[in-house]
Length: 568
Image 1 (cartoon, one colour):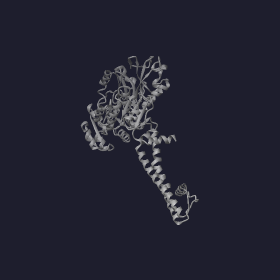
Image 2 (cartoon, helix red, strand yellow):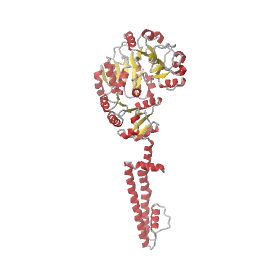
Image 3 (tube, one colour):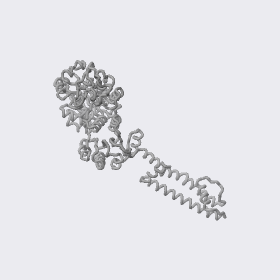
Image 4 (cartoon, helix red, strand yellow):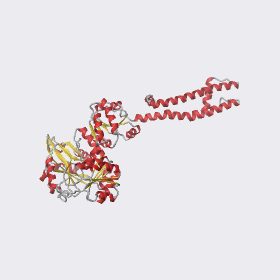
């Protein structure tokens, strides 16, 4: 009864329920009038037959006949009375046994069930909730971000304005709120004033409306918006967003940074303090077939080798690894040290041929523009002639047609290209093209975008050397802003972790700690007070009260926490 009462109280405020209830009440009123009329006629006909009954008896007889119970204790003796009984019986079957159940279900029971479904989804955060992240759409960036927030024990809530989607999210056990995104009450119930950050990740037009709504009740809460079109960045900033992220443009630029083109050189991909983290392809350089120890990069240039990319996977190093043509070293050093590396390797890996870019959409166009600005020639292949025309200003040549056409790819330069950049929005197509391009050119470096994380291993097996997803870049950018850090995109699933040195490791050397062998993490630096030490060796001691900077994925970090009994 409490449940029914609460449901009715909720629905009395609902416009749709009021409409349904009016229809049901009108029918019940009609049914009542029919019963009263039949009861009066019952008395009239009974008097004609010489029988006398009370009014209660008249209602009793009418209801038993209309409901088809027909006890038979009260009957008519005349034909007119029996004809009247038939009319009452047939109308009762129609009105009580057919129309009434339908009307009850349609205008009361179903709305009641809908109310129950609606009330499954919370409409406000628990009392006292603060320092939480609010997310305005359950998209690929949100899903990736939520995993990272969960790992860091940061509370978060998705706000959904579509009931069906809200119920689906609720069934997936995702913390969420149901409410309109342009309603201040929705964000008031989400305690937006005490939120750590709000991620506005709808389309550009809706984003602007949401930002204005939030700003009216929470002038100081940090707002991060995702921009689909670069033209909308200024609009969303002027509306009140603190950070507007053109993720598709950034994704194109990040992918463009990972290609091999023209000369061998280091490519900075991140920064820690005043140190740059960079990738150094060894393709066609004197480093091929040497071990890392034999390469002597630390002795010659002062840079530290902290990892090695092998077919899309970051491997820890011991120094004895043999470098292959498709190996890419991850090195760390200051700006001057990286420049000295570039000066030595500048004459190697010379390939003047254009990079081949397949897919000229928003991501592909941004990649083409980035390559063009860096003086790198690029040929673009896209099936849409209009897209080809849009990217033409940034390209050496443009080819309209299917990338599966061998003759077209041959004209576009697949056999001579130093790198192939796959930027279509279809994972299946990118996997197919990675395999196809790898078969056509065994030496080419293949860089690809991806959407679903489950496809990363597949596309690496297909032949891709480097893969980066829209969701990873977006979630990394939002997370960096929430921490007040610079965005560092090292690779799919690869992150920097700054961890206080566990008590169990204090005073031990790096060799004695076994961090790399036991967890797979690469130790890239030790920070003690304000001093950052990057020239590490097996004998480097882990001091008390210092921090250790590690490179790896979240599984490696969790293994570190388990082995060394620390919580970060």
